[in-house]
Amino acid sequence: MAGTPATHRLFIDGGWREGGDGSYAVVNPATEQVVGHAPEASATDVADAVAAARRAQQEWSRVSPAERAAVLERIADAVLAHAEDFVPLLQAETGSTIRVASSMQLPVVADRFRRYARGALESGTTPLAPQPVAASPLAPGGLTSAVAVRRPVGVVGCITSYNFPIVNLAGKLAPALATGNTVVAKPAPQDPLSCLRLGEIFQEAGAPPGIFNVVTGSGAAPGEALVASPDVDMISFTGSTAVGRRIAGAGGATLKRLLMELGGKGAAVVLADAELSTAVSAIGSTWAFHSGQICTAPTRALVHRSRYQELLDGLARFAAALPVGDPLLPGTVVGPLITAAHRDRVEGYISGALAEGALLVAGGTRKEHTADAPALPGTGFYVAPTLLAEVTPRMAVAREEVFGPVVVVLPFDDEEEAVALANSTEFGLYDYVFSRDSARAYALAGRLRSGSVGVNTVQRHSETPFGGFKQSGLNRDGGSYALDAYSELQALVWQS
Image (cartoon, rainbow, N blue to C red; front, side, top):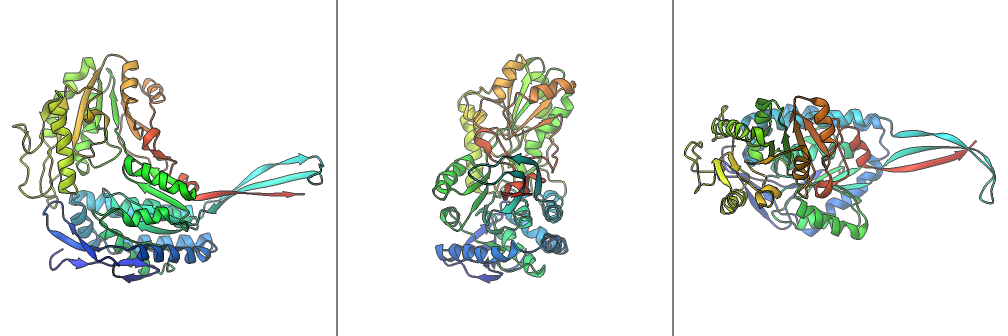
């Protein structure tokens, strides 16, 4: 990433153009240096991108599934072929550790394109049992047959998150294209450069112009234009619940289809019989994986009172042992947060909790810092792995999504109280249960108002339906469920 930072361009209709409203700087969260300049898309740019997608969709929807699969496979190949220059860009703009950037960003992008290359070949037709129908004034009688067929939605606006920018985009883009849609992507403003770079990959793979377009901007205007456009049939959004509510309201004017994966406040319910080392390492992933900037993170540790101090001590040792610092060093586990503003927001939650009576066990802000916490670098947007005890359910830090390396611990006395605590926030994206009794954990999971529940693990399964209950989202993607998410169902009926 040495040299003069490049000025990137919008990718529209298979070609490149300057942003109609200029450009803005993208900053490396670890060094605070400019990585590059992203284009500021104008309203005209967004309209042109949507028009290009609309034109391309007519032809792309008629391309055979095998041909669509071949394009997606070539894209996966090209992504991996350019790993040497892609990974440094991803790492620099996101601030992720080099381990995460190289093993959990780019390879996952290729995997998702390959998965939905296979998905393009999955049957989209469901036969329905024939029904004998008597004659009526409507039509003659006879044996009536039918099928339900997946059809493309049309033009999909993909508005993506900053934590895993290109991974999140690939998870939307690949199934949308596999099912015959075209896409206009609006990446998060903090780190859009790798998403723009994906345009070069599409060109190299020989993808038809217009099936994928990227518009960027430092503010909300390009995304708002996508949501408002009558020529955009669906919005797929990953981000905060507050923004999701605005998208739902604005999209309702044109009855857009919506797929929204919103905020989370993951509860890790640790029962009295839990294997505590398993629970500690799982909850500790909030700190150890991308500095807690994960919507599925187990940020609320709800533990049986008999194990409360034991869990607290284990988490404190875990936090203190995590190397914080330069994300380019192989041993670093905790890197920076995405921006100075987000660091300040996270520190505000910590300070607010302390003012409300919480106890700082590990970490803290730059002002309130435990003696045994790792030293923070002088440059970059860092927050130490922070552990808070004596937290009450009414505190903001226990109710709201912090999206940073902050874990709160609350005790409970019985399962009824554990369920009530777990379900007490507006969120319901991903919860966890820890118990040596798998049947007990399975039964408890069924009482949690959450789209996913991990039992004794924070590991993911890529084929499961992914999405949230309550204010954590609408609809589901993941695996073959994503093929349904980016499709409309058409019924075909005939008589024999």
